[in-house]
Image (spheres, rainbow, N blue to C red):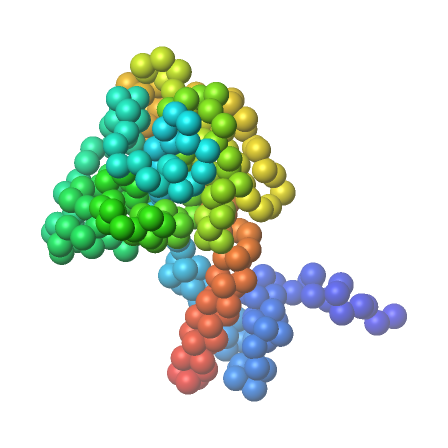
Length: 265
């Protein structure tokens, strides 16, 4: 009795499976036989995935003062409290923006149009640049705080430092289509913060509600907090509106690499 095609597919070596899937995904006229491409299929996919790996991240930081209830009120703040300053020191040291030659996350590093300083840190291959809202210059006539919103609204993850832990800030006023995750930080004494994480979309909204605590004087906690932020940013890219864009980019790269391979056979 003839075996079903699905069963036969399971019997194929892994390289041939990859080639089969690639033939299904792209124009078969561009594809040579299994032997020619199958040998390189794994390395081709690894190379494409390496090129598309997201290692540079941009994260917004807002100071939510006492009585602030909306994003606009938080964006209007040009100064923070002592607790906010301690939190920024916990994130990492300040870096001067003029002449900065590493990951800049869209910040002007030639002049001071976006401010004179920011905060940067890294973990392994990952680089994180923070957009600290109170440090971004804002024109007095700019009642919509466009200069700050241009950065904060394009950051996938935003940190909200609540000066009043019991305040009535309305998360629903954070309406950027790009921002998918909000990390709400509350101070506990002079040396501890408590975090809650909220996703705008996806399977979970409030995923850790006041269960994550960090000591501001602990270096390991700084790395742990940075690791959390990177993980949250990566999780955001697993959902729309980023997922379909990344998949289209991946297919484009695959198509390009495959066409080059075919030309060499």
